[in-house]
Length: 518
Image 1 (cartoon, rainbow, N blue to C red):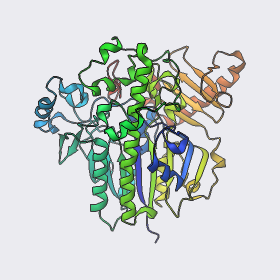
Image 2: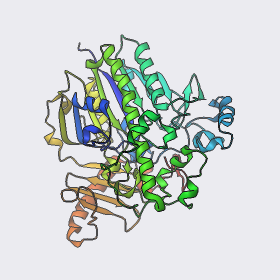
Image 3: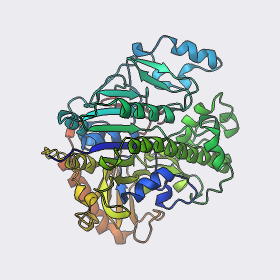
Image 4: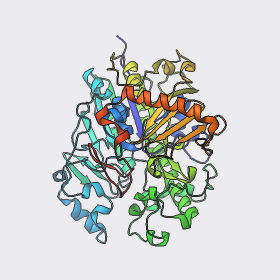
């Protein structure tokens, strides 16, 4: 019997497909990511399922669309029961930052009476199937799919951060059955350390699956939040690789001048609010600060990931380990005049910079090296691809739109057959259909639909929706879009009818009308 492959899924947070050296960004230093791409295959057209953290993550692990699993926005509550907090967290925090309420840095942890909610209950994840077939499954890093304190979904090793957007230097993490505050601990390296500890202590008689979920490069981006060695790399960077248009008209603005906003007592507080962009008066200063921190977070993560790759090589595991590198969703860092992803605007957006994510796959000797594929693929396809690669048969139930692309990875299929595959995305009452040439975005609110001819307008700058010449095209794409959703959605979980505004999901059918974004 052939030896089952090990699997390493590296899932970053808010990393656009553009944010890698191997994707053509000459300013951003990502030598580890680039080396993984050179050793395998990089997908040019790889998409998330929703341009925001939690729905995208649940879809990746279950293979189901948000309107079939019910998570439609980033989860603002339900991470943990308040009693799992170690008694000394508040005291330790207040000793170090006595001038600021605890809730400012960890708003979810600070919410009184919060109760853990297991959003994955009743859903099957590919990690559960791997565990049932002999895999030892480990998680290190961001979960953001509900209950952070309880091992689930087939994972027997569980090291998580407390919530979604975690502070880089003072993270709250789950250790030994409690949530604890880590002092002067860079969360990126903490996540790497736990992953390496697993590789050193695992059961070597079994294949492993390791989910390495970095919080980088999600905000905060202030220089105090990242090691100087990485921040200083980009202090004088011109950032010519990033478009520099004025603020998008749909960018929300907090009711406070930039000069006052900058006086917030801690940079983490300021930059947790990044998607609001209260900075129209000082857009260029805000742009430089944000890009410097974002690039620093990516490069710090890249170096930390290199330690994991080195550990695989040192243990002779590299050639039998499938490495998948991707991100939960994309990110605009000034693209289209937005800082943020889908909820960087209201109404929420579906720009390629929000929905296109890295897609890199490497397994020396099994996946031919040095390839770039134009196939149209998405996170819906990960479920079947992972199980196919592991040699585990699975019969989907008809509500899973993805398909395995393992043969493309192995070089048995050129991928030509999937170059015209249609990609679908959703974010509550916003839906997208994208072909190679066309993108149509439908919104429940009237007057906000979009149509782009990507062959002539790859930057999505010219909305054709009001041009009478394109009405037949709009009608055709809209029909295909809603037929697809009718086939794969569950009516009781349909995001089209939910009041999702990008401010967070509170429970199964309740959404925040305002506040922080994550």
